[in-house]
Amino acid sequence: MQQFPALDAAHREALLAPRAGRVDLVIDTDAGNEIDDQFTVAWALRRSDRLRLLGLLACPFGITPELLASGTMLAELDARRVARRLAAMGACPDAIPRFDAGDGMRVAVRELETLVALAGANCPVHPGSTRYLGAFDTPPESPAVRFLIESAHAPREGPLYVAAIGCATNVAAALLCDPTLVGRIVVVWVAAYPSFWPHRNASYNLAQDVRAAQVLLDSGVPLVYVPGYYVAEELRSTREETARFLAGRGPLADHLDALHEAHARKGSGAVQSKVLWDLAALAWILEPAWFTTHVVPTPRLTEDLRWIDAESSRPLMLEAVDLDRDAIFADFYGCFGSREADG
Image (cartoon, rainbow, N blue to C red; front, side, top):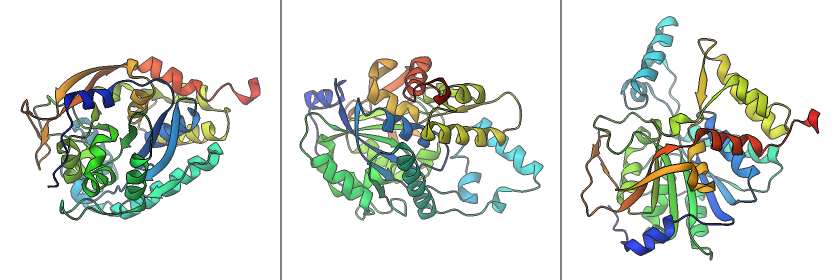
């Protein structure tokens, strides 16, 4: 694997320290895979007082029967629900149509362009890789990777923040193409289980591109890791809450409300909620005080998605262990203002 520059403790601490005022941000997202990406991007587009959103990067995503059957994509309870639904349909994982990484990336581009148009914003959308990371010495280049590298080298005080809310392909490729990014960016990544988790991880963002995740963890780039399970998972919203605070609050809010409603219609019962996982990445960038974090050594990740206890010599990262769900949603819903009928 590529050799990365080592950051001294003071430099790493300075990059990870909370910053006042507006900060520069790039979002790397698989929008269209679920609906939480769209909620996160919309929030960023509405918080220009705090965020200077430089660009949106579309990362690859896909689904194959092999991935679904592997046990690495879904938590056990979710896997059981999928199995029950497939059984009710008289289907099996092999019957699921293959949807490759390039297909997903193109879906993400369209979703992002829709969000930018609805927001009336001027924010570029950059296509990312159409494949996952293969050999470490041949990272996939793309407009997204080139834009991330160029943006990281632009003069600024403080780091460029990268909200990585999909697989790590684009971010890992940029790090491999230009290892000096280690001292220029802070990556906030939502994925998987806490680093103390003793079992195999089950995480879509992780399982999609294991090698890219290994590069991200091994590079030493300043990292804020928000485990999906037990931390980002706290960010649940019901259909009733979402409709109350989004419907009628403008084209962008109405679009999000429609996405949430469509998702709810796929549910199997009247009592249900939707985890908006990816809001957690943007929430930390907006206000780290909404989180409890610990400084821990960055773990290693095996090919079969298990954490290996990190040696003391490993780079340190910030790992979120708790968050203030209500404060985060208050800011998210609040940025869309009041209903048009109330104005």
